[in-house]
Every structure is written in C-alpha cells, then in structure tokens.
Image (tube, rainbow, N blue to C red):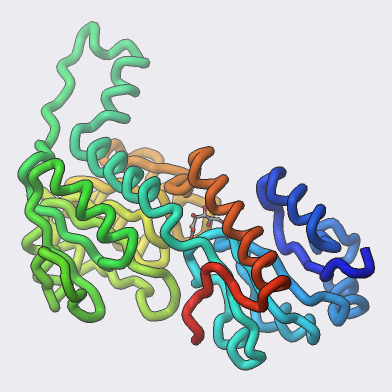
Length: 316
Ligand code: 8YV
C-alpha cells in the first residue's frame, strides 16, 4: 500500500467505483471515521487525492485540511458544490464527468416535459385509483410543434435542443452570451424568452451566478399556458415563487428533477397535480452512471500516472 497514493473519499459512491478505487489507491472513506473532523485534523496531510461527487462536493475548509492534496476527482458534471477557487489557489486540478451524461439528462428533460404536458403521471394516478370507471380524464397540452425556450445552452442544453427538433419544436435560448455555430435564436432577455415559450427548460449551471434566475417575474411571463422543466439545479429557480405560481395556476405546470434542499422536496408540491416530481435521477441509468464512474477513475489514474486529468473542470 505504500506506493499507492492515498485518496480520501467524501461520501458514498457506486459499489463498483468504490471497489476500483480501493484497488488502485490507498482509499479512506471519511464518513466511516468515528469523528471525521478529528480524522481530518490528524491525518489530512497524508492525502494526495480526494474523490467526491457533484452532490457532496468539497468545501474550502476540507481542501485546507488536506495540505498535500494534488488532485480532486468528482462524480458528476455540476461544480456548484466544489470550491473551485480554493482549489485554484492551491493549483489543484479538478476532474469531473462532463458529456457522458448529456444524453440521459436530455432524455429526462423530455420525460418531464412530455409527462407534465400530456399529464402522464396524473393519468396513471387516475387509473390506479379506479377513477376511469366514472370520470372523464381532462384534456392535456400538445407538445409537437410548440415553442421551446432553453435557459443555458451548454452541452446538455444543446442535446435537449436536438431532441426537440424531433418534435418539430421551434427553439430559442437564453445564455450569458450567444453561442456560436448553433441554428437557434438567441434571446438576450430571459423575460422575453419566457413570454415567447410554451415550454421553458432550465439547463444552466448552478451556483451563485444563476441563483433564482427563474424568478416570480419570469414565471409570470411564462404564463398560465406555459410549462417549466428543471433538470439543472434547484437553486436556479425561486422555489417559493414556483410553488405559488403552480398553486395559483399562474403557470400551467412544472416537471422537476432538482430542488433547493435535496432530498427535502417542499411539501407544498405534493398536493399539486400539475407538477411531476423526480428524485434527481436525470443521469441515473446503468449505462450513464457506469460511464461517469469510469471517468472518475480514469481522471485519478491519468493524474497519478501522467500528471494530467482526462476531463478537467475550468480553472476558477
Ligand atoms: C449526479 C448531477 O447524479 O452530474 C451532476 O451534476 O447532478 C448528477 O448527474 C449527482 O449529482 C451525483 O452526485
């Protein structure tokens, strides 16, 4: 074990990935220590690597408690819980898992969009409670040919746009700046995009810069016939404003995979039929999670053998 780099694991990972990591590295699971803080204080200097996930992240205090840290490898594409500035100050590169999850996350955006518009989950509940025997199920909303507004045209946003062309949808997007080489109309004003769109899909990165971007005003602009889909981060939406908009029918409905304080979903949403709630599963297929696990491992192995990550996060 002496030659193997010591790697600190923050939070549980897939069993296969944990086994691989334990085979290649001298792996210690922080959560398994009786007193994680005391363990960090006593052993922090022994670690050359840290492995975490988008959900767990790594904060500045933990990075500081690891004075010999050379590399961080994270399971997931989101970087909002990783203190990139603290890592950059120490020149520590951060590996992550972009691209391999684009397809499944885009598929989930459409799962939610189709479900909420066509009332699939609501119809399923209707059948299960035996209501079909004596009630008529209400009409739903057509998806094909409608207007899709994408907030955040990154890798995932573009994959969603490609899915939408199969539904003959008209596509426009809002982004911090126009994206070169795409055939979709750029809308500099998010309010204008919301006003125009039948469906507004959030695919922007989380973090301070995008906090509550989808405000009460944006929801009002989306209007009583508009639907919101969020596969990005709960923080991008003003959650209290969204609940109110759904309760008041100020928007037609929402499909959500992400929330502000996961796994706590605001109970106000449970009673509403015009919302579809998923437990942050957009990337959660066997195939994509395996590809993500492969990349977490490859990032660490490449760093320790060649000094270079396979997929490095942008330096803060
Ligand atoms: C992960 C995600 O499932 O990649 C991300 O940023 O949000 C999801 O794909 C999850 O956060 C992993 O911890």
